[in-house]
Image 1 (cartoon, one colour):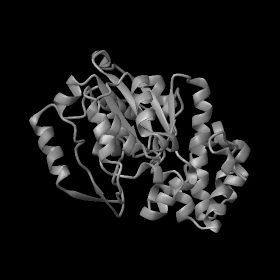
Image 2 (tube, one colour):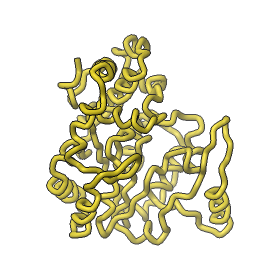
Image 3 (cartoon, rainbow, N blue to C red):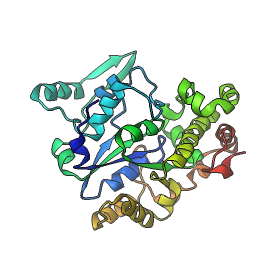
Image 4 (cartoon, rainbow, N blue to C red):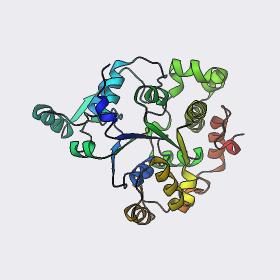
Length: 314
């Protein structure tokens, strides 16, 4: 496939990935305070972007793609995200997407609102860093690295804190049975398949899903030393220090604007807001989950041996 290679020379792609409710939205918005960056949020959410739906319609919501996978539709889609054409180039397609942004479509008995990605073409062309944030591309990182070579940043968060947030928001992405993807099982999960398939308790399945993501990332990190990792707990413990280090590693411009953003958002918020008292987030799960709930999460999270949060495993 012919890529728009010129765009690779005009900006740097940063791909920020975490599991849902890992703190990736907060992190993405902080990084986007850099004066020379523009944020593209969840471009591959097929329930919000028609192009993502077209690319992923034969795939899992959180698709597993190996480095050497050949998927032309996915490659065309991610080329738009990383390289150029998120915004239509002519008046007709702009009008079509405007209509879609105002209309609710019914598909497979689910209401799906398709809309344009709210990024101005001028921003995409003039900013030196393009920050792409996704909670659905976590099992496609090897593929995206091979085809587009973004700077990948992974955010890890304690599984109990993630699931505590799932329960608070009744989040459907808490358990998407990602292990049912044959290629993922074949390459990463065969030794654990019997225990995975026998896991039925909902909270254990949520813990298992997080363990699968972390297990894949830990193996891929060994092969990709240039990938950066952060933990939500460290960001919350000392936001200014940790974000300064991250900005330096990503060659993003640190400024008073970034510090002001961190201070202004370090207060109480609810739901999907990114306002939080950071220090209160670290052990929030201990206040919100019962002993029985924690035990169930541990049962699922302990199926696969992990380095991250290994002390939480049974």
